[in-house]
Image 1 (cartoon, each protein chain N blue to C red):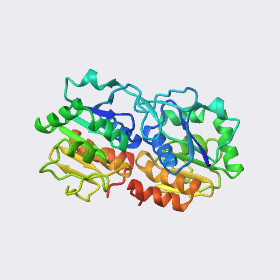
Image 2: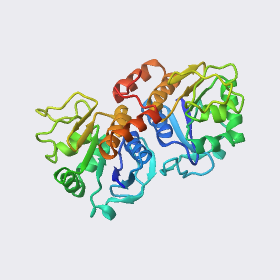
Image 3: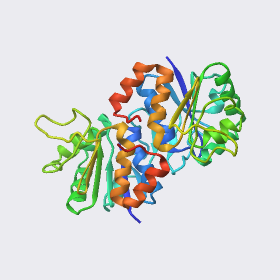
Image 4: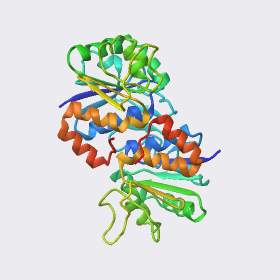
Length: 182
Length: 182
C-alpha cells in the first residue's frame, strides 16, 4: 500500500491540509496526518485537529509521498524545520513524491534550494524577487507537485492521487467526488 | 457580526465540514464548529477535530446560518437528531439561512419535510424515488442552500459566504483563495 504523510503545523491552512488527506484515503493510500511538533496543532483558522502521530516518531521512514500544506504561519513553521528540509530533499533525490501548496513552495521549498531547475508554482506574490514561477493552478514536474492556494486544494489533492495511485484512481476519485478540474 | 454553526457529527465528511468553516471565518463571520454529540467527533475518513462546543450547549440560540455537512454516516447521525430537525425547521421558517450538502439534503432535510416546494440538490442518487432534485452543483432557493458532494465543497462554502456576508465578501473570498466556480 502506498504511504503518505500530510504534515500539519500550527498555522497550516485547514483545507490545504485536510483535502489531500481525505482524497488520498479515498483512493486507498495509507495517508497519515503528522503533526510537525505537536499532536494537536491549531490550524490557520483556529481548527484543532488530532494527528495520527508527530514528525519525530516517523521521520526515520520516508513515505511514498510527503505533503506540505500552506498557510503563512504554517509555511514559516515548516520552513524552520531541519527535519522536514532533510526529508523533502531526500524525497526529491530518491524519486519519491513531494507536494506543496500556497506559501510553502516559495517559503520552504525554494528557500531550501529544492525548486532550482524545476517548474513550480505558489500563491501569487509569495515567490521571491527574481524567482520565476508558473501561472498554472497545479504544476507537476516529475516528482514535485505544487499548487497555488486554498481554492486549488481539491485539484491539488486530485493531482497527488494521480501521482501516487495512478490515473484510473484519480479519475474515479474526481468523478465520485464531483471535483471540478479546469 | 454574523453567526454560523457548522455541525460536525461522527462520520461527517471532512472537506464538507472544514471548507464552510474556513471560508466563513475568512469572510469575518463568527463561525463555530459544533459537535453533534461529542466535542471530538471522528469524521468520515478518520480525522478527529476538536469542536468549539457541542449542540446541547448552543441549541437555545439560532445562528444566522446553520450548516449541515454530508458523509453517509454523518448524514444519518444528523437525521436522527430531533434537536437539529427543530433547529433546521426554525431556520427556514424564521428566514435564517440553512445549508446542507451531499447526502444530508436528501437523508435529513427531505426526510424532515423541509424540501417540499423548494428547489434543491444532493449527491446524485441520494434522493428518494419520486423526489425531483436539480442537477446544478449548488442550488440557492431563498434561504436554503444545497450542494452535491465533497468536490463541490469550495463552491458551496463560497455560496454560504455570499448568502451570509454579501456579494462583495464572496467575490473577495473567491478571488483571494483562487476558488474555481463553474
